[in-house]
Image (cartoon, rainbow, N blue to C red; front, side, top):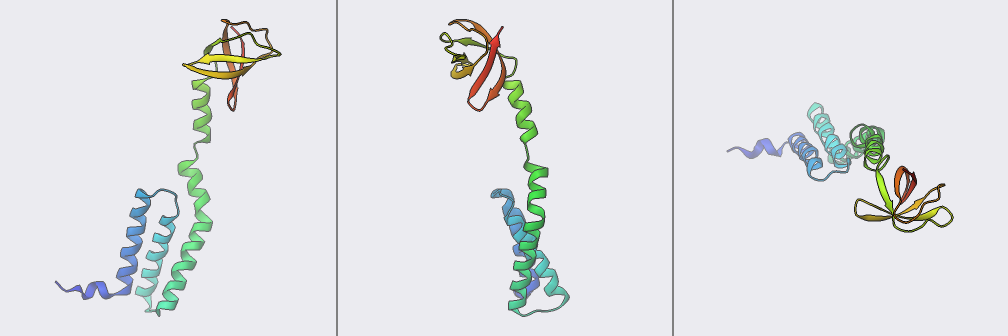
Length: 148
């Protein structure tokens, strides 16, 4: 087998670029993909006109960083932004569900049992131990509840 094919810097850059693109699948973070794309760009630049190693490295770094700075946030929002999904899941998980007061609420603050866990809770209603309450909102680790 003739390995001279792999001595061509353009081929080496393109193979490294494809490896970088595939590596992004194994190591998510949306960074490696841009360096893979930069390597592919460098490979095609060398293929168009042979360049010295210094210029190859310069093209690789500049193209990778430019792609990273321009496209990373856009791609993250498009593929990984689950804030809307998380809000919908949160509402389905808590809002409108029933919980049980574990003790009398003092000055609007108490504890409730929900899905086997104890939660801090706030309410404007006068809630007594054993009352069944409805969750109307979740504020971080505190549930806002009202009497059923």
